[in-house]
Length: 192
Image (tube, rainbow, N blue to C red; front, side):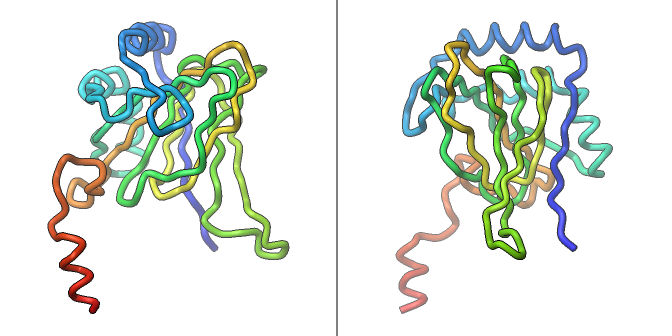
C-alpha cells in the first residue's frame, strides 16, 4: 500500500572520485559543533565541486525520477571512535544523500532509516539498515528520519551528505539563506 523510495548507486570511476573527495575533506575545517560527528556543515562546502564529481550519478537520478536534480547544500561527516549522529531528518521537499567515502563494512555501520510508521501488528519501530560498501551513494526522501550508531572503530568513517532539490519551487527554507516570509509573532497573533 505504501512504499518509500530509497535509491542506491555505485559511483562511477570510484577510485578517481574517492581520491578527489578525500583530498577535499582533508582540506576542510571540521568541527564537532552541535552534532556528535565532526563536520563542515553550514561552512559553505562548494556545491559546484560536488555536482561536478557526481555528474554521472545526478544524470542517473534525473533519468530514474524524471526530474531535474540540483544540489542545494553539501557537507562532510567524519566519525571517530564514540561518535554518532542522532535521529534527525532534513525537512520536506526534496531528497538527501549519503556517499560512503571511507567505509569498511567489517568495521563501520551504515546510516539507518526509520519508517514513518510502526509495524502494523506489534507497533514496534521499523528500522532499515542498508547493505552498503565504499563508493555507494544512497538517495532518500529528506523527510525520512535517519541516524548512525555509535562508531566503535579506531578507523574513521567518512561520508559526504547533501540535500538535493527535485522541484526548485519547493526548496525548504532551512536549505537556503532566505528569511521566512512571515514572522512567528504574526502567526501567533493570527491564532490568538
